[in-house]
Length: 363
Ligand SMILES: [Ca+2]
Image (cartoon, rainbow, N blue to C red; front, side):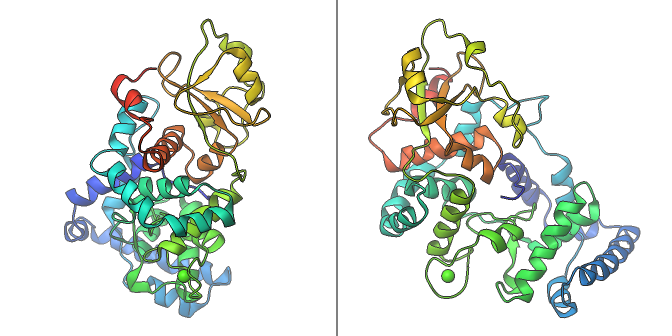
């Protein structure tokens, strides 16, 4: 994916959205800001035309676009920075609150055949696809209510990540212009992600898939399109067909962490992948004395790395290369681990894969 916005940022957006309804937003825009935004829109329109976007596409998409101060506020007050890291048990508890697991079990059963078909086509396990759906939008129930072109234009105008959001606004214009979406139905999060997958517009154009064969990719309303698109996204991000994500593990006594540390710094998703050990075959971890919790070892040659999200002795996981495909969806170990544990919880309800971690924060 394309650049993703970590889920905690989206939570902040939801809170801000409740705190600052659109009408109050409009009242907080000064005449000077309105004028600056109007000037910026004119410049954007001219530059977008030069990039090949048709004037009628721009007219249709930018109709009714407004500056939304709460979007800027959300973008500038993102929590979870290094100054106050979020502990994994607290993060997981927030992701699994309410009926996230029980409703997921029902949804997984309801869509079992459809998910199985997407698994066969993409190589990505049905439960992982369903868990992404569950974490992103609570199985399609919470998709964001911001006017998408307004949110994207506001973030591009604000400038903190101008290049990113200018590209995404371009992609939104193309979605409308090419007939993928109706302007009036384009709702999403403050950060420009939309639909049941929470794709950015550029992800929609590059990874959206028509799962129900009606000739359109509808990520707001078609479960078949949603599942096919998530499966395609993860497959393109490196999921290895037939591979599991990994498992929670007990550590051997006297583990020498320096001896299993990675020797090269990561070249992408740098901060999360810096928390991973070297990739070693499953047989090597087994020989070191690691013990899976409620899981079986994969084939001997499956490559795995060790993660301890809260530091030594606070809970450990051995994860495959396929796990890293989830980091392509959202570059965060806490996000990816919450997806994998939710996948286990909704597909293997008899296995208490989650409770010990939430309850103790340690193994
Ligand atoms: Ca479709």
